[in-house]
Length: 201
Image (cartoon, rainbow, N blue to C red; front, side, top):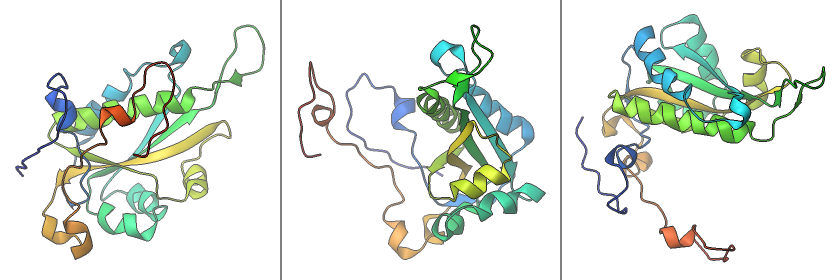
């Protein structure tokens, strides 16, 4: 489905970055295992402190036994549109790293930052491959942690809902106007030399 994307950015910003956006309208298409893994493989190449690679990607395809489980942890609003997608990927990370000098793991303060880097590479790769991915934070993290059988030293951060873009008309009327790429605040509101200057965004 074609879309005119008109975002204001410096001419040096790569088009593949500006073309990434997060729809809610999806079509209930199947995504093959090979297609999904080719998208997730991009996340494997993110940078991480000590090259610890703390991220974990736990996924489910639609029309599989895990699909309903993965959806059940979403808040009702997110479930209402996500159930039309092709795959759900929960992004988690290990919060500690094995130490070479002690027998006990030590805290890895950057684990969430590193997992976020992996997540955006997945989203960009999905878009490059003709798919869309919407990050979701509205789900029960305790239920997801238990349902994904994550160890105690792992934290689940977000879910990525992946699919082909559907028709805007399938969304509730109050969401239809929002179904387009959003702009961003000016760079001068978030980038500062030397020290933070408090501004209202």
